[in-house]
Length: 374
Length: 108
Image (cartoon, rainbow over all chains, first blue to last red; front, side, top):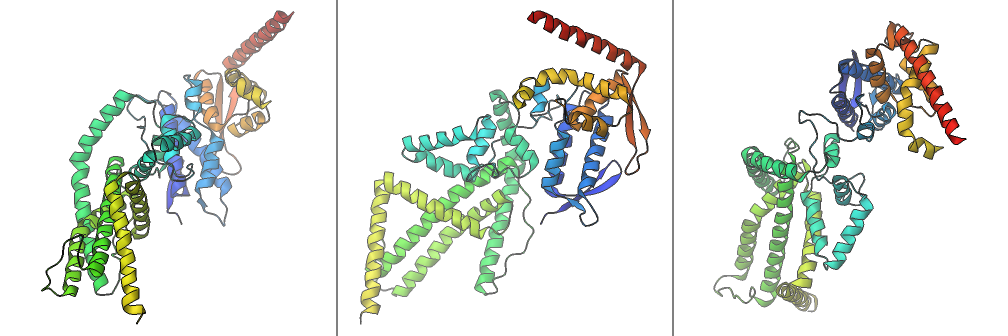
């Protein structure tokens, strides 16, 4: 289901699905940029609009009133790229960045391009950014992963979180963007960091505070077993830099919550089986169940801020409200991958995991011996 | 065929103006006619290219257009050759014959 946008093409109204509208607007923007120096720009644009309107009419009938994205893509394909008549035959023929001096040139940004990606779109986005074939990028990833003993794979996973998905045609255009220019990139980074700290950071902070409140409300509603989803409008799609920071946050907070969960489980099992937590023996005068409750409360208190941050980050990244499913799966994947790396490269972590295995084995033995064999 | 189409794109681009003037010289046409006439030829083109080119030709006073009511839909621009365009076309034809004659002569 798509939202429908009604537009006016030379005095007649047409209804387009939203992606079709985005594609048309991107096409017209590019056309106007290509014709920027043309004295007859307004007339040509009107002619182009009329031609597109005629082609739209041909798609529509009494039973069909809306032009969809595929039809618009075909129409714009038939129209072909608009060429300025002042020369540079190759420049605009490839549908490349429109040339204009007023800074309308789209900034090049690294996006993930889902549609053209085999898996997550990271490689497709990098290929578009660098202007090389996507296969080279994929081969590069695989070789780098092999030669670095898997470390590059972790970078890839982090990029899946940090690099935003190009979801609108403007973002897709920006993914291919203007010619690479290091100075420009540095300038832009400075500018955007300043903008981010000026505008977005407070907004983002208040956003996660709000998320945190929503999360607490949700926990309360669960406790009272109404289990209602917090009904609120989805936060608007955030800007690029915000999404990068949010993606980074989603990755880091996922790792932290995962680590806390593992620590909690290890403590819980070891408490039940050996009556001590990693060598610390709780005071004997407190009842055993009380210590379990305290452990649970401590875990909830420590992990809930991180959970809220993680949730806020994910929601900022995806622009959607209810992402419990996807961020849960992502977290599980991170736990597995981080765990695997820790097992390979960090002896202490490996020891802890082996200990955890022993703890769980002891626990299962304890359960079997105590409750199942008498 | 397709390889020739790709390789000589620049050559055709330069000659597209010639092709359009030739079409317009025969009869009064609108953009749809020009596209349909060119479609089966190596000069096949698209609106995105044609509108800017026609506007350039009109600015240079080689062609002009009249609004003509069409049976269905809005009125269309029908293009015709001007006197200046007619002499331009003669010039181009003469130059083209000169070019091809020269090329054939070089081979001998």
